[in-house]
Length: 312
Image (cartoon, rainbow, N blue to C red; front, side):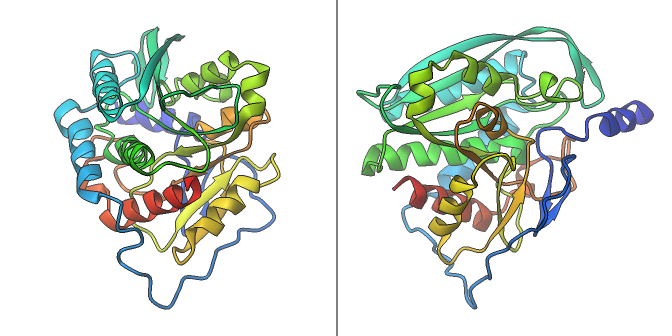
């Protein structure tokens, strides 16, 4: 079994989460000419945003990773997690739409998996009109077959839920559509077997909706402690969203990089400005060890604060 897993890992180097360790690229894409890191302040404030509720994010991570556990995109556990996300955002006042799509059979990080159906859960604020200017913030809800997925990606989903609360209570500069994507995790090498939910979502967008989507941000593996917050895009856009997020960070240290291993890449390939937050390597990646102790409160606060400042 170990040899099967190792072979699959080598085959799937471009899988969902890549990795940036304080500026070092570990994705399968060619390295960019340079990696820029914003200088950390002499003293980083512990409370980067007093409105961010870390305890609530922790509760969400525990619910997804401990109470539900591994959430393969076509499994009953995934649909239980989708029910939870749907109920949470509906309770905040969002209008919910489910978007179902087919996922092929394949290899989930060394585990053969059958074909099936997954879904995106889309949460829109009252009066939302997709053909008018808006922002999209998303995180994938699924995991590889064996992983409880606390960091990958209950951490991102928990931040999305918190941002949805802040947006509903305080308002944002543009309306924000929040998405829990299904089937981000790969079932083989290459784009065709990766990012199924976001690829489906982009195909469903009309030309008017694509023009109206001013930017998309994917929150993927955002809780591992590091000296900075990775802020990345796929390297084919103008970098405008990355620069805006770095500017929003203020005193929070950031590292910029090129990364094509999350749902932002589906949008960027469709010429929608997009970026990703997250992807610091950690020992429990894509394994049974991806449990809540992999997630750090300060890093959750940093990521939620940066994204909230950007939305405001």
